[in-house]
Figure 1 (cartoon, helix red, strand yellow):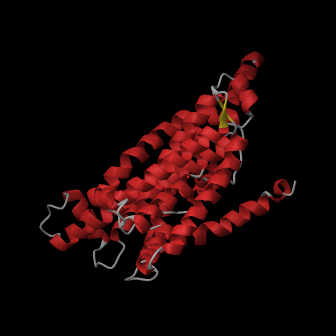
Figure 2 (cartoon, rainbow, N blue to C red):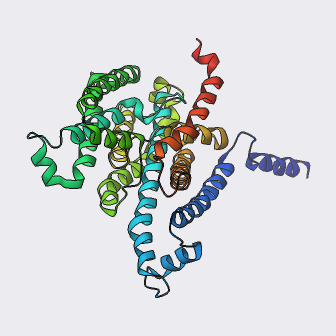
Figure 3 (cartoon, one colour):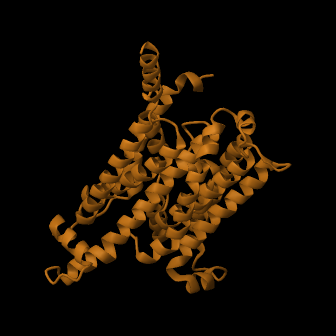
Length: 367
């Protein structure tokens, strides 16, 4: 009997979660974030200058706009203006947050950000080229053919070219140096900033207004065409990210240890870089530069649910989408009926949080 009691106690201790096991907390957090995301989506669909109520929004969504009680004006506002804005905001928020989580795992640094690989700088430079030189003889025909797609396509390919150049500089003998990539990203970002400054200097007043508004980031121009142009790229990157979870977990211990654990470190680096480049480039292309989401969301979740990437990545996607949609709601309401660029709102939220991270890491940074 004593032996059976000891065996039962041993089995109970074996199956009792330890204090450091955050799996249950992580699953609960993901479920709670999903419910929060649904609530935020409904709030975003109902927020704005229109007199639509939440009841009107739910009625229109359930009936797919066929309910005669829903006016034609409300159908247009909901399905042609607000719904694509919510879908695009969700995709961009999720992509920036997941990209930040991947970069922080890859660099093993909580201060890493999707812009660290130069994607945002390259995409911004390409967009500025189209805005300033789009009416010239060199680029005019292309802009005329592509129309409204010229700016997002230019930004996407600008980010992609910058990333490929960065990868080429940082890779030697089939191995990519993370330290070299970090330094090269800073250098390429500075070069892109210099060329952008030259173009801004020669821009006229209207172009300067367009550049300023685009550089601050906004979802005001969200359309279904932008969703269908950037959405597949972002969704593909988000679907690829969970397959990197095990490799990113192992790389926290160092590349040598990850190799001993059977992780193909170089393949993880390649896949992470391509995924971040695609997601961030597509996001910047359709919404401009939106900062701090990639830093704030992953770091906050690591403090809450732990660093395990199989939970961190889906949680980051949900929280990133919620944060960006809430920032968009604030941008629409704070100066209504006008609209504040969403990059200002995310900077106002993210900058104090970033300073707090720096203070927490002060002992490390002073070394």
